[in-house]
Image (cartoon, rainbow, N blue to C red; front, side, top):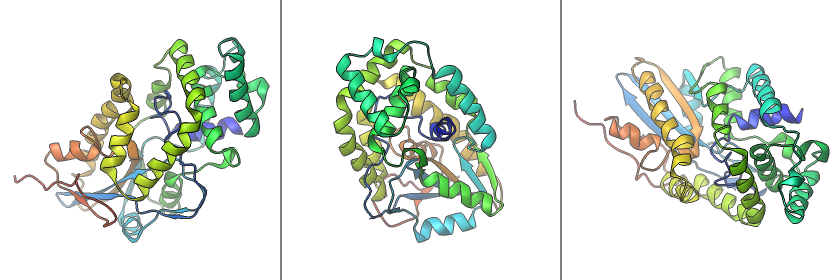
Length: 315
């Protein structure tokens, strides 16, 4: 049960998996929030693409849909997400976790006594079993620790904006597509060695108290629709880790733009593309890449700045 749920989560939270920004993508507040996240529109040859940056995990009480988002959902013929999250995909991801996330080595042997005490206390509070989490590989230990620290009381039921959109698409018989396969996304997890993973896990344990403030800041920026500042904040977490940022964000954005361009040549079709908010803003964000290709990108909502918007280049 827990592995199946984790598999679903992993399909949407890969940008912090290497724990360069340990749990900062996971909002932690549990108070009522009226969010107005950014929504963008690109039009070409009679086709329309709505681009939405999601927080993959949201706290309870966040009302994030807006009239503009509702209208885009209703108008869209095609819904595009990062990776599949159906039962077949979850089964593949669960198998991956079993074969790549567990080891015979006990984490007690690589963590100090104090580090393991912090690690085990957090996971026990979230309801996990010590005979299992003591044998997580470092990358899996880091993901589980970040989630359990910020969400100890609802660890097994975490959801994000993606969940509502996926459910809507299926309930209304919409065509659903994906930007990556499960195998492509899961391959990102195995990119680092266990040695690097242990160092990241130790860093996460040391900085756990900071993650609450970081996650709240990202939630606030996302809720305000400030894609520029959110992108800059995420960039700051990757300081000194340019290659990892390229692997997790930049290179994937370049690949995804190709898929978005294909949607923009389907006359009369409207699509809604939902990706993690980390992929939207910045020099190598999807908006700027589309602008570089000559497409006009228009900010649809009025909830925040539109510094990333660009006019279409004349033919």
